[in-house]
Length: 334
Image (tube, rainbow, N blue to C red; front, side):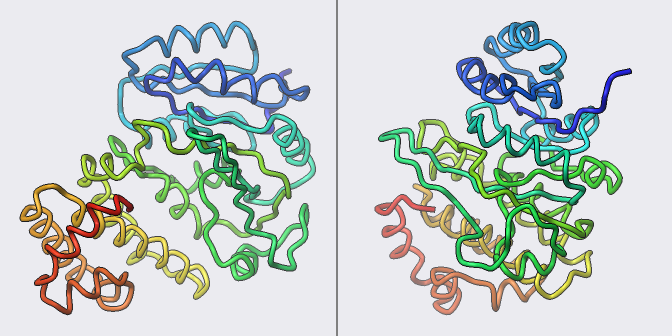
């Protein structure tokens, strides 16, 4: 009888042939590799992703498996992973990122000892241009201790942030039993993956070592300002999907505030995207339409959860849009 895998790692992969041979060994070559499954989800790639995945499946039998599907976007790969995962726990590692193998090994070993609903680990931003590494650690300035179970809401009150996707390892059953589905044919759905399971998480713990290595600053990254502009309809969609979640769920005050901050961040991104568009007139029109929809669905986010630029624009009845647009195009920041 095959023993249950302790962890399923889903690798969303679209045209990722050049990355997989670097990424997969950091996961599959650990000494406790037999305890995990690595699901490479080929999302209708047009390059050699499937062929490379098949080579890796042969190289790591019993560890690496392939889900080959039509293109459906990042969310669809996560949904496919949730359906197929056999591990007790679930983690997402994008194909162009990787893990610190030593710290990942420690995480896998700890998963055998815990029954917490969610495990959080620091992650590291690795900047492509100069190799600079910046660790994102939520626990430096709080009294929480690693490897101990905590009530989820009390834990969030201490760290005052919803942990990012790169930090999260979560029970597969929470995703599956609560029918968590991420929007498909979309970028930027990591916010949904972070937020949608939150009402169902009761216990949480953390490990102190950085596991996920997040590649930053390479050409074509979806979080560049030009890609935000190109895909702004997706940013719009995800913002209102999160707002719909917020309107439908009764949350504790701590969790409610953190979800609010996440949505407010999306609103700020959308504001900056419209300000950064080359067609200033179109950008202004789209922002006014966005704001009016926001106001009609939940006026709280229109009146109270607004960034400085949005506040200035609304108070000036968008008269200052052209001036702020010129500034945003020079700064090129979201």
